[in-house]
Image (cartoon, rainbow, N blue to C red; front, side, top):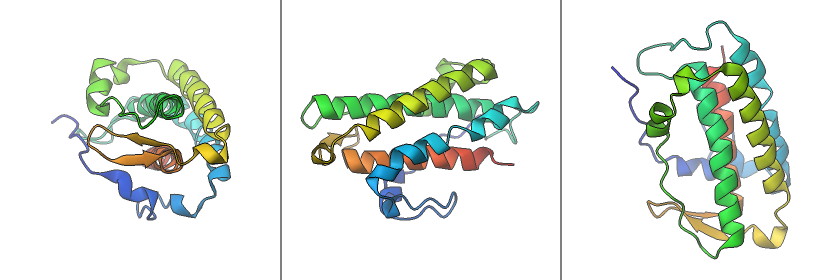
Amino acid sequence: MGIEPDNKDWTWVITEPCGECGLDAASLAYEDIPASILDTITPWDAVLASPAVRDRPNASTWSPLEYAAHVRDVHRIFAQRLALMIAEDEPTFANWNPDETAESERYAEQEPAVVLAELSTAGRAAAEAFAKVPEEDRGRKGFRSNGSVFTVDTLARYYLHDAVHHVHDVAP
């Protein structure tokens, strides 16, 4: 059996605590989100150094390496979406299917050291981009292809949850 796509609508994590990873994104000040994003990078050092980095815990769950490659791409995607929201009025984001990307980009075959370096670089860049957004621009809107509306503020919270949750996913 392959990886079953996660088709859940996770937008509720913007306003409610996540019972799985424990993040309460709504309780954070926007100014604390970039540092919180940076905090999610360090755990990947140990995860990607593990001899079991390529091992899937079961047939329907990504390996730690696959999760890391996904998180690298999450950092990149959210930095791109933020840039689009700042540059354009109410843009619609291109659809992104993480499961298709994992397969087409062969996450399971990538080199852990390369993924770690890219994840770190992308995470730092995204955190810096969110940190630079002035308060008056945090209400700018963008739309997911399914119609979900985000502001810069809610996009930051949604993105942080993704980064935190995936660290939780690979925790021993």
